[in-house]
Image 1 (cartoon, helix red, strand yellow):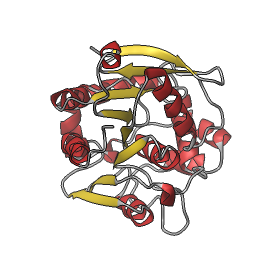
Image 2: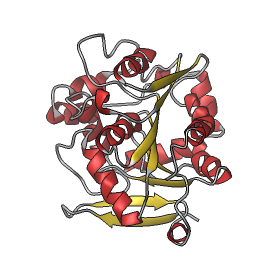
Image 3: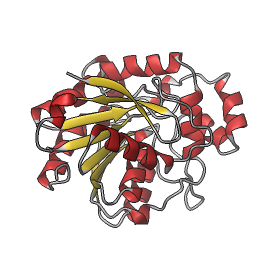
Amino acid sequence: MVIEQDVKLSDGRTLRTYDSQGAKARDTEDGPTIVWHHGSPQTGAPLEPLLTAAAARGIRLVSYGRPSYGGSSPQPGRNVAAAADDVAGIADALGLGPFAVMGASGGGPHALACAALLPDRVTGAVCLAGLAPYTDDFDWYEGMVSPGGLRAAADGREARELYAATDEFDPASFTSADFAALEGAWKSLGADAVKAGQAGPDGQIDDDVAFATAWGFDLAEVAAPVLLVQGSRDRVVPPSHAGAILAALPRAELWVRPDDGHVSVLDACPPAMDWLLERGSTST
């Protein structure tokens, strides 16, 4: 049973959290734990395929809504690095020992932030279809079907807010494999994204501004092993981003999935969990 609770942080904000083992985990020895970082936009509630895969492996899955998502308090001006302090607060509140992190799409950079800035707590990381830090070293937008939101975000929050007023999803951003995934195993992701969108655009606006400006940490700071997973047909976060992240990380491996787009790549989550378990990256 997933336990939902609001964790109060030292600055007075609250974060809506979800724990697949809840109070049960407090009565047993620390086992493997993964903190999941959701995409943009989502509520932070754990998705059914992730819960199923984690349960089959005896993994305690913890997730949360980033600021302005899913009932979590806003955090104006947050950068990507801010996720590390938030996750540290959640870990303290839930009594977590060392844990691994996983993030997909917009969650990927935030998972990497935790790996970089919580080196004594994060033992491994998986980043699926995650953005690279904003740079002029290559065309950061090339290959994105709909980069308008990120381009606006690079000009600041006000510009991103104006863009949100007329923004509409471009179906060309997803491949046929993505749509098949949303109709099948990852149907819960689509429903959750709709729910997050109906609550308002603030979470995604703040995410985009954070992605398109300085992240607040350097990928070279990540000492833990990292697995990158990238679909070759991704039209939301193109493969060039995975290449840039790989080049910047000290200890990283890249899985390229030739037939996957932005959503269908999530089918790699179960073997990615196995990758963490094989390295002992989710346990004390």
